Amino acid sequence: MKIVKIVIFGIILLSGVCGYLYYNASYSEGFRAGAMVKISKKGYVFKTIEGELNLGNYFSDKGNPSTSIWSFSVDPSADTVIKKLEEAVSSGKRVKLHYKEMYTQFSWRGDTKYFVYKVE
Image (tube, rainbow, N blue to C red):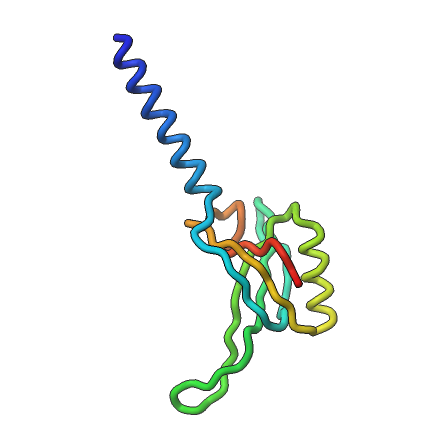
C-alpha cells in the first residue's frame, strides 16, 4: 500500500512539474524591429494586452508591395513596457521589441504565443 502511495505522489509531482514548465518555459527568444501599428486591451473575461508591429514592406512574387504585420501579447502587469509601446504608437518611430515565444497560447494570458518583455 505504501508503494502505491509513493507512485501516485510521484506521478502527481511529475505532472505538476511538467505542467509548470509547459506554462512558464519559453520556446525561443529574440527581437523584432519595426513601426508600432496598434496596442489594445482585449477580452471579455480575461483582459489581455495585444499589439501589432509593422516589420516593413516586402515585394511578393508578382512585384506587389505588401506589409508584414507581427502580432504579439504583453503581460498586463508590465506597466513600463505598455507605456513605451503606447508612446511608440503615438510617435510613429521604429522600435526594437524583445520577446519570448512560449510553448502554447492560453486565452487568459494573451492571443499569441509571443510575449514582449522589453522595448528599445
